[in-house]
Amino acid sequence: MADAHSSFKWLMTHRLLVRDEKYPHIVHVDKGATNSNEAEARSDLYDPEEEMIRGLTQVPWERVDVSFQKSSQRLVAHNTIQVKSYWLNSDGADVINHMMDNFIV
Image (cartoon, rainbow, N blue to C red; front, side, top):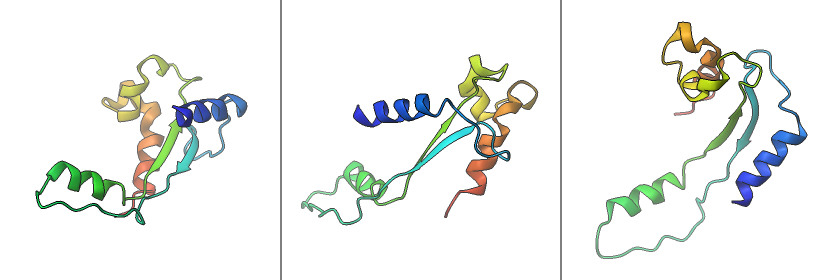
């Protein structure tokens, strides 16, 4: 809960300023840490959920905060981020472009 609170506090102190003209709706990117050094507890039983969680904790994650505060599409922000329909959700295209430009395989 403290992590969400600190992100909210960061957003409020920076007043959702646009920092990048290429991605105007991206207001903050937080590069998360991985748990690659965490000791693994093995058991005799194979648990696919545990294996998936263990794998996901080793993948680097980013938290990307977006704001559609000044957009006419702000009331449908989740659909806008997904650009479900370009003519209706076009403001989210820069979010998708940011994701594609920063995707690491």
